[in-house]
Length: 244
Image: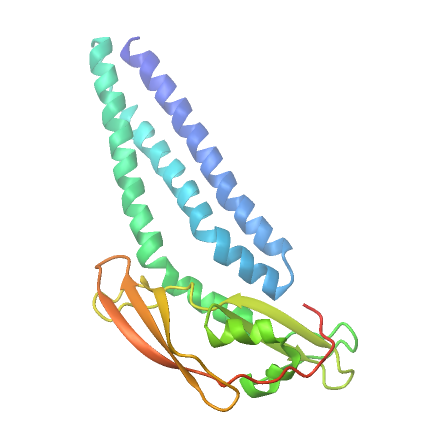
């Protein structure tokens, strides 16, 4: 293969990569625009956005690497030299992709957390009356959570939001991951500080609160920390009708 043939092929590969990468990003944006429910949009962003943006970005970056590589205009050269150019192109693309991965992994979560917070606490509209529903406080919501749900909240493994239409009595319960989200590390300031282990130091009873020890680890700098939190005393579930 000579240089002109390789350059022509490299440009085709670049255009193909750009098309695929842009389609991945546009597909993600289209999915977001078509998802109307705040909770569904929250879950989709939380589970897929960083992965999809990373895939799209890496493909586009590799496309740029091939395109810049096609600028070489020498008319002579060996097949071995073309293979070296190809290897260099892929290496440059992977390096740029790694930089993009770090940006999405360590910086982008700050932006995502703000968006997720807005979606989570955006007032829900009652399907019964068409009016905004009320988000119940921790104390108010317990009557609508069964004992298993309350236990999950007490252990911080899951968190539940209870929305109530006070006019019709309609209730909607939404489930969220309790401690799976990373927070800002006090050492390196990246959004990579996460609970990796929990120990119950004292089991709560009906009359006495318990104590839980949470072990944190930063996925970037390795900083570790422990934090003791209070477990609420067990409360008796009073039957209620709710829609999850």
